[in-house]
Image (tube, rainbow, N blue to C red; front, side, top):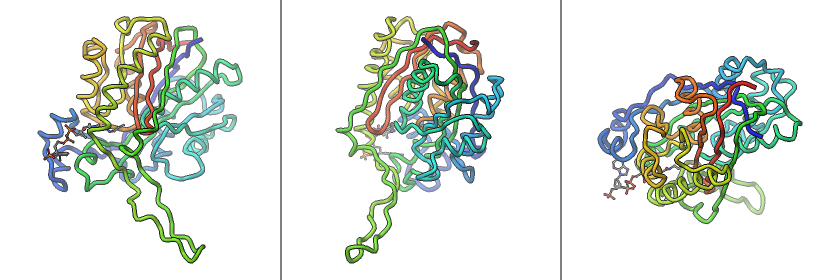
Length: 326
Ligand code: COA
């Protein structure tokens, strides 16, 4: 059993942070950023909450799908930058949409979130317990970025994208992984308050912002992206070269190019929009999916591979036959 992608949508904040703006507060340059990452701009949510961006992307996806909020059975939201510890971003989006029949939950798999959530959506659809899933990926990495750390600050941006999914006939296979051993290289702690117990336990000094060892993450990424894509293709019973399009997580253009080379896939078959939005964590693959559908870059029956990696360290890929009608 596969999935049908009835419609997709997006929300991108208006504010554009160019490489030149980073030069005003960091020891960096447009030339360094473009050569090392391929990024030129990112969007920054100055005052729109993460769940609201998700709701706005979801509204566009529902409109494209011709589905009303009360037809949604399940809302899955992926985010590493939720506005609240609780309620979940998924429940807040549900409230914003007025999707009264649905149940809603967040899926925490960092930048691989949308790949994990697609797998989960498909499994729920397969049981027949739900007919329509709304998948929303929404992120404001600007809230988790240390803007004094030039190695990481230039990478991240904000945005949201969504898709309305139903059961389909075509191919679907997924290969998901997590490797916690590398966690010290990429993490973002939550703030901890000082406690009045035990004589007063002081709050943690650590900044509640992203710590990243870029080189280690890079090495991990170029190893696992091709491995995950190959594993999903193998499960699907197709050769990598049969794929019509690969949608990789947009973390660094050099990572994407190295993975493409390892897979012997020409760059024309790879979706890249990193120059416009930077790394939007779990939203990046969904923003690409929305883009390729809107631009007519994929047609029904095309075989596409969505592949991601991120903190956790999580990684994985989904191979599916694109269908847009039930
Ligand atoms: N501007 C200018 N110089 C910078 C810089 C910046 N924004 N950031 C780092 N540098 C410097 C470093 O200090 C270092 O200087 P040194 O040689 O004098 O010590 C030099 O550039 C090279 O640093 P390095 O970290 O080796 O660069 P790199 O080629 O590995 O690129 C990243 C750095 C972060 C772009 C790259 O490692 C990367 O993309 N890693 C993966 C990150 C990622 O994907 N994170 C999210 C996971 S979901």
